[in-house]
Image 1 (cartoon, rainbow, N blue to C red):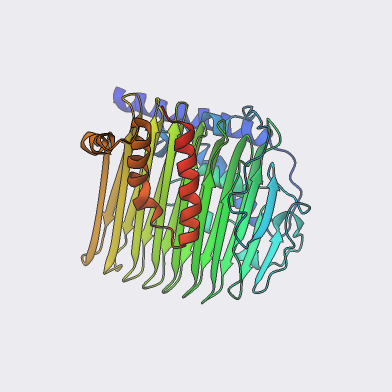
Image 2: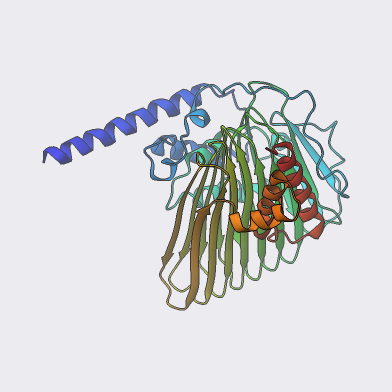
Length: 438
């Protein structure tokens, strides 16, 4: 009885701490004007946020990644670079969309007009009737079960800008969203809603340091037979503290592929939550991260198979040195009736010294009997035999380590369908490694 009483008191204290932190965070938010069409979803998100409270280190899905800098009322400072992040996709024929400290910059962006696609700013839509009303906050709310994601609910409630993208016919070029960080104390929340009508295809690119503290939600509805390709590069901003969320819903015979390259940053947590609702859908979630020193990178993925004959892949590679930390939390849930599911999960780390750490929590939960699901997680050092082989042929020690590191990351890069995009990210990886040669 005494043990039960103590446990109950501990739960009550934790709930009180989370409630106090949540109200302090809400009180620090800038006033948000009414948007009409999104108000019901925002009210629902606020209620869910208050009921759950902001994340705490004692929460199961935050025990490896301390969330205090993401939940504090005021954002931490982040120094500015003398020059902004290079336009890594600038050689591609693309439609450029620019945000500065979480606010859309029309002057730096291209004209939003592009055949087959509608692009609007969330901040400029005031009508109570809009196609996004049926999606905004809906996929995020569905993604709260069975694991609470309170920072996503906070975003749905408080986001002040973002893109509303509807694809009715496959556009001729990819969309490239570029983020700039020009304030040491910026605290940005962006919310993108993307709807692909049946049979369409879209490639979305993202790069750049968005803010001193960044909270982003992307909700993607992929219609029957539609294809969504997403490639994101998070880099250069050493003091970045960011949490991103992708919530996806896949229709019949649809394709969803997302890849993230992350280098640097004090704290980065990328969450992906997908539901495969239509038969024969395919979802690939992949990433490569490189950390040096004061770096914590967390990939948290939850894929739910509802329909039959669907495929999902999770492939994550992390290279860590000088005390950097990596986290992977990935789950595949196969619901009853989701027969002939093919689920694959791989998380690996390459530790370049004895001070770095990789924490992994792979999970499978299966309620169907005709499935092929597997997961694997490994952590190790550079292959000494391979290193000796390269050194014996006159390759320097630093360059040998770089070559073996790139070979280790290659499997994750292969998840990108476009060869041109793979080459761009390979160049970024090579440059990062060259700058940090011993």
